[in-house]
Image (tube, rainbow, N blue to C red):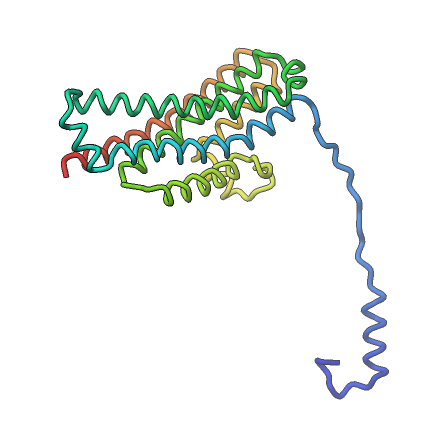
Length: 244
């Protein structure tokens, strides 16, 4: 009626009846949901990466940025402790804080899914926990690098949440990477969560042969390299800031 204002009511009615006669074919596909103990733990650890990433970036970043306050730095420079010792002590404190966050997040899953842990096996779960610990090194390095840029609480909160969501998405926590396009799958290889989730999946579901253990070790090595690269950037920023 809108396209042909001059059409009669009968023509409009016929067009409506013709359109109403069309039916879309609908098929129902039954999908088997994997609810095994390994899948349950894998899902928890994959989603738990968000809590670890965001919490570590914010907490560690606040520690580093707080210690870099000009007035506080001047008071510490007047003390008997060298700058090198002070920097190592601050980094050690941030590392302890990172371990605490990782431990709390991991133990919530271990305790909450104790039955699944018993079914999968302690050894396999420990390998998965090692993967999540390797992941925790990356937000530690990110917090360190952001402090070198002078980031404050608002920026740390924003980066922590956005980076946590982005990394867990590209790691395949929100939806399987097989459902994403080739471009997204390629980009996913450049975030540590992809390698961590791959290690977790192999540790919990596959037979722990020498080949599988080698793949897991490779995944963890790549994850640690991400943290090392970001920490190197943070060291460069801190060096330039101290000589500015």
